[in-house]
Image (tube, rainbow over all chains, first blue to last red):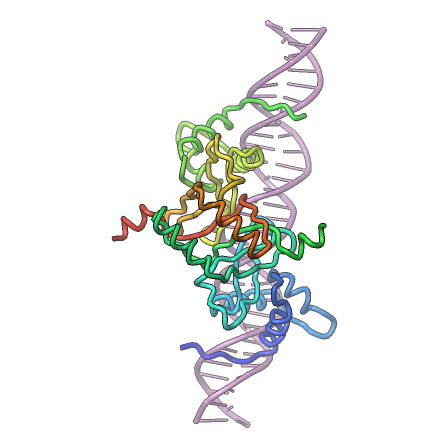
Length: 137
Length: 137
DNA sequence: TCAGAAATTGCAAATGAATTGCATTTTTGG
DNA sequence: CCAAAAATGCAATTCATTTGCAATTTCTGA
């Protein structure tokens, strides 16, 4: 099995993404942020690390029409994203986990009435979130 | 307003996409199909036409993790895709319209319990469709 | 019917995100 | 401190998509 070495790059990236919490970001954004005067990092390194983190389940990884790059979002650790849908806000891009009993109803309905086995990972429905509606009002 | 000229390219493309119905396809696939011995078309033309058709609502246009290119699917004319979610099969890629009363329940739940205003267009949940499950069994 | 305007196409070049090969550097375990 | 394993930097590459522009096609109205 692959060992993992702690590196400065990984640390910087982790610091960035854990600070983002509900927000989503692209590899380029991580790179831009980390390419300040003090720090120095390579874009390929960012890509490699983000992809590994996504594989490890630390990050959600998805494409949407809203952006021409792959977006990532920090997946809170104790959260198993295989059991619920995700709602993404069309305005702010935030991803909200649809964690409630209603998920069972959705899943069961799809199965029973449509013979469709829901796969939650990567399933993202769009809309406008609470906060953004408030802002607009 | 922009006039529209009927061209051979448009005709060929329309013929292809209307024959696809439930199936999805990329610009490249349309191009490959239309680049037979008899016919001749340019990839840029395919892109331009598909994008216009998507703008006009004739095609659904979406990205998903399953493919590294934008996918299109024929949007049946009398179907208003603003009122229902879409289920995409992870195996065959087909998009199924979730048109049933249960949609109201989902929409209402999201609104009432999560203060989330669902936007159906572009909302695609993933899973395995009936047909693909049969095949695997 | 025909000339000219407008739209469309073909082609090649450009763009831009993402990936990869490889030499170099860093990390870690003994 | 020393190798080997892993990670990085860099440049080159890939691949989908877009764009500029000249050539072609479509349409319209005199």
